[in-house]
Length: 540
Image 1 (cartoon, helix red, strand yellow):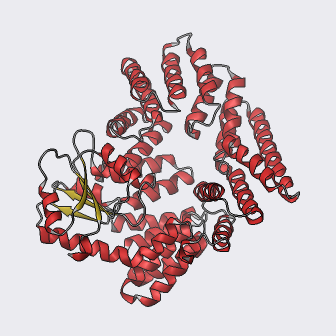
Image 2 (cartoon, one colour):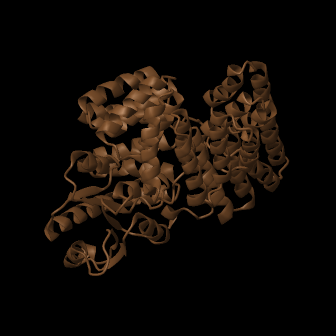
Image 3 (tube, helix red, strand yellow):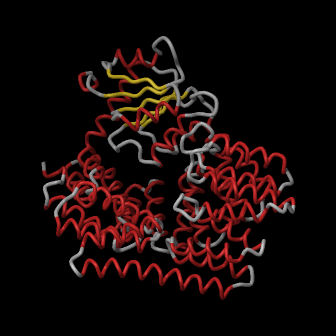
């Protein structure tokens, strides 16, 4: 038990007053440093402000909350380091909820009732496995991904029993670095060695990221037949169909997946969005209502969910319900940056259905609110532009589309933006806006490059940081801004805030364009600078 005496534990369970049985079990196991959270909201507050070795979370957390949503928020928003162990506790023996908990890959899960010895065994096993990987995790948390890969290789040779686990993490790191071509042979070797589902899933993902959609699809189709409860495979297969422009197929796959495991919010959200796009408004209303209900108590709820629900309700003739949703949007999320734009878009949808003369006023409000970087999604902006074109507000539609194009993360997104004008018989205008946006982006980047060539590295950083604020989703802008920050430190010395910004830009570049060949050199340059200035954790 000595290994447990110093660990820090967050126990998340809807209890109050007397210590719970799990708390007492932890004490019997030698664990004394325990914090207690009674809801997902209070748990997130703890997780943001303190480090925990272990999060032990009940599945049921009261009305509208569950452990799966907490884990999803943690993972999606990177709120806890990789060294934190997450164990789900559930008394629910119903299959769908256990699958829902397991598919998000917690470190482990416990089915009640269990004994103190069983709890001790699970926690000890998770700690031992974590300790094997802790040097890799520390490199990853420090942004030293190439060193993490090197450490994986070293440990593969040293620990034959865990070799496959280290290979798996090495392949995942190559994916993270935007190197799917390097991940592919690792996953192929793993697949041939073990033929496990996750190896084939990784192989399909690495192939998909290289644009070989048909090949990825064949692997995934076999995978979901052989492992019909493997939810990540359904998600990737649906995404593969989306990338290939096959929305109906994507919808069918997600619908089947939701039938198996109906509690994943992001899957439900994507299904509702695709149902809207394909005109399946009844199903969209059903699924979007579930999304809104599930995220009601989450601090990561999104006003766009309510806009999409309003759209589905209006399409189904439920205008009174739609108006209630708009009022709920204003009341429940007044501090969200997106709320003014989303409220105006929702009102415009309702007014369009009623032929209300206030339609153009609300569309103007929505366009104005969406001009700044408030995080409005591309889909929402494209829908707003379509509404403007339907109301003969071509200039306003052009302003929205131009912002989409400036922020375009890939050619497919640019084509979608152009198609909005093409569908309205204004293809020439769409192509003209595309040319304008490309020219603006190129000129901004060129100005920053010229400053750097002149030796004015701070000037380059200033120009490109402004560009990033204007176009945070444009990979060309983000990548060049990251390079400007790195060059500035290379020549002027390490500066903590600048290094932090550089790392965030590198992470953003990898997220926006995972296959960009510039991602890996940027990460390597960052790590080289860490070592040069003695900032590498592994150097201490």
